[in-house]
Image (cartoon, rainbow, N blue to C red):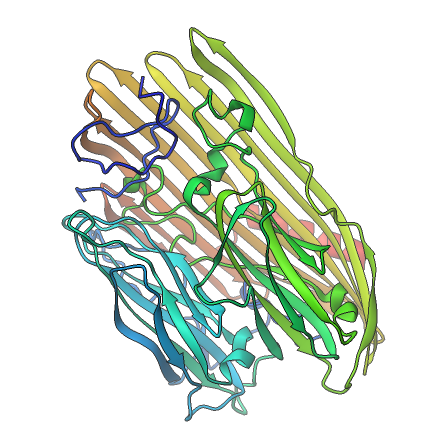
Amino acid sequence: MPPSSCRPYDRMKTLGSPGAVCAASLVLALAVPLVAAGATPLRSTPFVDRTFPSERAAPANVVQPEHASRRDIGSANTVTADPAVPRPNEAPCVVTLFRDETFADFNTKPFMYAPPGACPGPWAKVVFVGNFNVSAGRQFDRTAQVSIGNVNVYYGTTPEPSANVSPHWHVERELTDLSALLESAHPGEADLGNLVNSTYTGIITGTAYLQFYPARAHLPAAGTADVVLPVPNVPGGAQALPTTTSVLSATYAFPPNVERAYLDVFAQSQSADEFWYACVPSDLAQALNSCPNTAFRETEIAVDGIPAGVAPVYPWIYTGGIDPYLWRPIPGVQTLNFKPYRVDLTPFAGLLNDGKSHTVSLGVYNADNYFLATSTLLLYRDHASGRVSGALTRDTLAAQPTPVVRENIVTNGGYPNGTVSVTSLRAYGIEGYVNTSHGRVTTKLEGNVGFRNEQRFVNSATVSVQDIDQNTVADVLTRRTEPRGVTLQADYHQYPLVADIKLAISPRGYAQTTRIRQQFIGARASQGTSVPFSFGYISNRVEAADTLQFDPSFNFLGHDGQMSSQRYLAFASNGSCYQQFITAKNDVLTGVTNGCRADAEAQRLLRAMQRRLGATL
């Protein structure tokens, strides 16, 4: 058996280095660098959440560009099937944030942002573009953040290089919703801490810029927030949440005419929490040689301490995670470019307008050293009214979830075997109203957030198995009622994760075989009193497998059976569709297939959403 003093997913040793690699008693699961190495708005409002593909027919002058990264068969360079942000078919104004910046330490890199003089707002579209590379050698995956005025404009992680591969990669994020922030100058910073010394030699460089597409007669301005605020309002990027009781917050004096409010949330697992989905109940952590607090994490949002929303945590896996070869050349879902989860705070708008200061806060339930979290508050004002009154009338959201833990572990011959599971189901309603210049608007949210994590452990003198089957489902129905009618919006997110990890033990050495299936599913549907059903859908799925080989002293010998794939599908009711399927084997890209068709899974989901909206309207 591997040394019992080791903990799961230890990153203390590098594959190929002398001496034993620290391993879990149940899972080797090495996370180390290798030497070999928009949806349409609700029709009654101008709000647009650009997480989903547009439900409206795109104007003829808007193009859907292919991903800017090259997809060359036989290449070992990092590659994804993710689409680029759709853009108007015209030249943008470009503002460079930093150029050829070197990241070889843990100092933030400051820059000054100023809006483009040749392209004053309003804008039809704003896009963040980042191009990065890491030199060949040895390096961990690193967290990368870019902020302007303490507001996050990019968040992701980096690929790991090898002795012969210097990965370069391209990321994009639509920032149109942040236009109010970008209309004035702000200090900015790039935060990409990277240790470089005689052992860890990979140096990261990057260039980032914003593209601005001015509004024109044929290209109308996007409906965007009037006020954009960071939560928390501090420099240095996302902040640490070490425990369940840790809270990040920001207090502001809000404008007196807020009509709608939204919070975009990022919560990234780090340090001992990096592999939170593999953790177990605390009373079993020592026996199973794993991290504690169960495998359940969830972000809780509050306004003035009142529960205001839930943001499920996506199980991002970084390019050093579990087995680094799994992610060459195709990284995990959103690994290079995280997507925020948007929480509707509109029922609290009447409370925010009372002329007093208010605090928006967030924390991660069961955090265990630690999560890095940040969020952005988007406020929409009633321009025809200097002051908007209103109230929060209903809130059944509990301050914390009440997960159910089941343990079925027995010891056979000194080895722990069996299953553990943790589930959580939350149903809540939040409702409020505002008296606007166009009448009373009532917003009612009905949310359901379900979580399930089941783990199976099989251990003996010759094998250690840890199988993880996890899923998160978040379903929120928003009903807005105003004098001109009722509009419904259904938002659906699902985060399936399956990880099967087997460590075979013999006198000849050790072999760790890992199979991963990871997916992001997001859908939005809307329907109104006089508005037909419309929708947008995204599915991003990555599958990977590999076997690591070690000698009896845990010296790394090599790997075999590596293969991976990514399928990205996005379509909407306007007929727009994007799909790409890429495959890799033995660390190089082997196939690229284009073509678009809504699969049975998507069709079933959208039919269910349509029935729900029709029955509720």
